[in-house]
Length: 154
Length: 208
Image 1 (cartoon, rainbow over the protein chains, first blue to last red):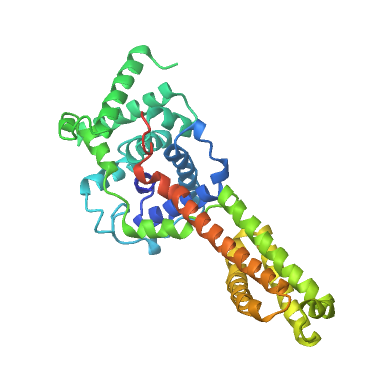
Image 2: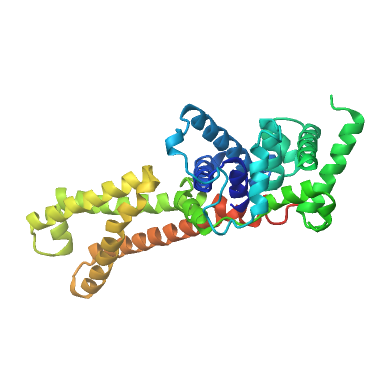
């Protein structure tokens, strides 16, 4: 559960939305539990695959129903209302993944969130993204290089 | 096709990330690579209590596993018992009275039979829809046990206690249903995705 929540928190800007995304992941997992095949991967990787789709659905819904300026919360988009999330460093990274300055593609953001926040192996990241192991390593590498460029110029 | 040298760099990075995330390489050492150190911080902190509570509310496994098949069998047996009781009480109350050498009270006997039919229907629906099993058990288990206890006390007083032995079997059936249900619930708690994932993405004993 922790890994799925961390992944959701890295991909969704609001802590409460990330909580809802996390519970939706497990609700879908329960409905699909009979279809889980242990020979195809770990439970964590399977859950991450579901989380990938739930997050994608969340962003599609947000695109169709954008938050109006009057409804925007005054705090920064990636602020953490939960005191347990006191790691400013972690929040900076999550914000950085989505900042225009980083210049990350959607796939690169997703790869980093799956690799680091969810803790998947490159092979598992590749399965979720529908690419090869080598391809997943390359996506992560290029994303990290982009972030290095941003931090060098920061 | 990825470039050869770039792919090699990517592969080395992947090994570094593996070591970092597995704790084989302290995050402090990743200070030489602040980007990796920053990305590794995404592994903190654990999910807050509000998230755990939200997940616990939605985790409900489909009741088609082997423990739940046993619950459905137990419910079917209990349903058969109450159905039999209903059929005899409603359609053969006089014969029953003769069998038991007991006074014939058709009105009361048939009303009791209708109640037994109702319990049988509840249990039958629960066999088809296991999510309704608790609703059926609330009525069937206490009634089955009560019939068995009452029957046991009547045995010494009846010439032919066949009916009381039948009620005892209904109590056994009710307790069997209760036990199967408790076992299935325990199995669900062990097998729920949240519980299995508690050890992390690779689970217990999995190697990378």
